[in-house]
Image (cartoon, rainbow, N blue to C red; front, side):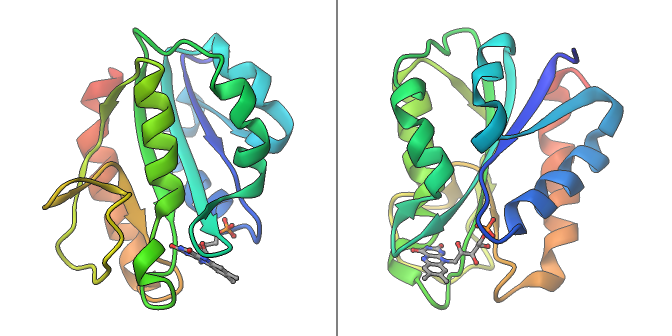
Length: 169
Ligand SMILES: Cc1cc2nc3c(=O)[nH]c(=O)nc-3n(C[C@H](O)[C@H](O)[C@H](O)COP(=O)(O)O)c2cc1C
């Protein structure tokens, strides 16, 4: 078992693809990557977590994360370091862009997690308040493969450089 784990939830595979790129960028040999629909029970074994979700149905958490929510709400993340990322569509769903990431932020925060990897809002166009830490920052990395796929690799690279020291890498 490695000491960092990445858990993702996906419907069409975008968040899985982003997860694999993040793991590769940080060092695939240093991170266990899990699909939340299959391996959610392993989350309690780790103190360093990377958590990724998409948003569906106009502001709803990805369905496998939604199904895992009752378990998440029983867990204790005090002493845990968490970096979040979300995938969404800011042009199609500006009012609910990355709401799923915002929902996971609220849940992990309530359960005591310390967050790293806040991400600037510059270069995005949306109105949803939920994924925001403050006016200028998302609570985690924001990926929009629907409208800005050409920016994904660069965003992942920069974000990984940001979180690397926080995870002792
Ligand atoms: C019916 C539908 C509803 C969606 N609702 C939202 C939404 O509310 N907010 C958002 O940011 N993206 C929304 N999206 C976009 C997806 O979250 C986005 O395509 C994402 O990359 C899918 O990732 P996945 O394949 O990992 O689930 C929606 C897409 C569809 C087709």
